[in-house]
Image 1: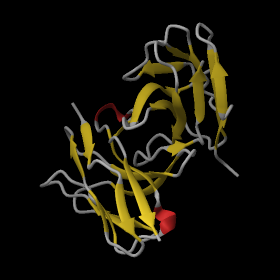
Image 2 (image 1 turned 90 degrees about the horizontal axis):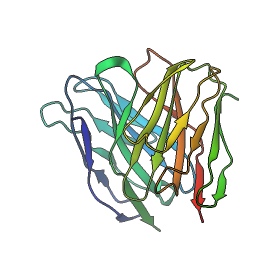
Image 3 (image 1 turned 135 degrees about the vertical axis):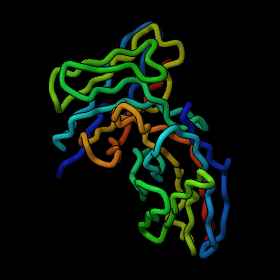
Amino acid sequence: GDSVTQMEGPVTLSEEAFLTINCTYTATGYPSLFWYVQYPGEGLQLLLKATKADDKGSNKGFEATYRKETTSFHLEKGSVQVSDSAVYFCALSVPSGNTGKLIFGQGTTLQVKP
Amino acid sequence: DGGITQSPKYLFRKEGQNVTLSCEQNLNHDAMYWYRQDPGQGLRLIYYSQIVNDFQKGDIAEGYSVSREKKESFPLTVTSAQKNPTAFYLCASRLTGNTGELFFGEGSRLTVL
């Protein structure tokens, strides 16, 4: 079935370091791909998305490119800040049936130290 | 401002009691969803509804029930049949026909004592 796999955390970085969080997926058809961010005690906020192969989603300095050939959607940021500390979820939309269901990875906790 | 409101934010329940979590949206979205979040397990889908008076089971529906009598509201009842109900519950909604983005509420944390 459809699934999303993220790199395990926590990821601990110093401020201004480069960030990569790996995400790979398995899906039939052509899903849309998403990154969501969750701050402590809160719900999820959409960070960025891509709807077709080779699309690049970007927001707040974060980027991810939809790679169909490697079934990947890795999240990157050139220089992280302490305020980026949160849990990051990769997700895909189930292509069939137009139900709008999202399948999520297990989440990756990012800790940025000053 | 438009958004999704979940209540209560924190809830404590004794074993054997049913509890209902509220989810209200004023985004005029057609579809609504309930997810459960446990540490290190991501989010798992409990129930979803694409239209009023209709809903479908997700991956972990056992021990839960929902209703969709109004477009704006999608309450979730955690019944005494749910074996491990302590979790963080997230409600989301989506406008049918868009690229699949879900909008989430702030969540409700249920603790069974």
